[in-house]
Image (cartoon, rainbow, N blue to C red; front, side):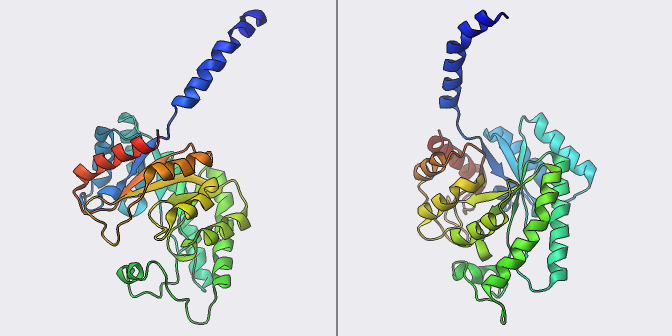
Length: 298
């Protein structure tokens, strides 16, 4: 094409580009966590992938704890199955505990997370959800939820110590994540990221493009909207909770059009992952959740 002919087509190309930007909406996937009470057999991940495609989701986030196997042939079979269904595996949700005074224990947690990064690389998953861990001074998770995620420090230790343990541990993970092209997404989970200030303290101290935030809409139990807004600029993935039938530990009445405006104002154009956490049968609740999210993030 001659330069003059190309220049004549620029206005039309610009208009098409603008139209594409206006029409684009966030892709919406589903975490296999949404079906954790429904499917328990060895083929549970495969069932989740097939059902996600049938229900009209755009992708699937895998919960690592649900993986029945972690050998390479199994992981490649999941990648192939998702591709055949037209769905990317777009997230990997994992657990860590760096809030521990024992350096040997923390190093083992770092090594375990590197193993998870290898799994992401093998399956072509671009982001991994990580946690800080917590003091573990609650009797069990039910007691933690009863106390709204708050628990006392381990005797003889301070929050400043815990932040140093976590920051040092994640700093070891950053080059491993970059090497594999997998973005770390620190979730506003329990522990040190129970508050937006805690999450920002870690992310800003490390200050790496390979450490972002996995923003969970259901983990700020009080006045969530301002807290979500505080961390939205760092988001790499939005995990969207729904509670049809009432939640197992608590129920939040989340205003998703409002959350959508917060995320869009921050420039977030990435993946949303549904995490259904209600008592209703997911076969009826998950499609309703998807419709709700499609209406909000349009």
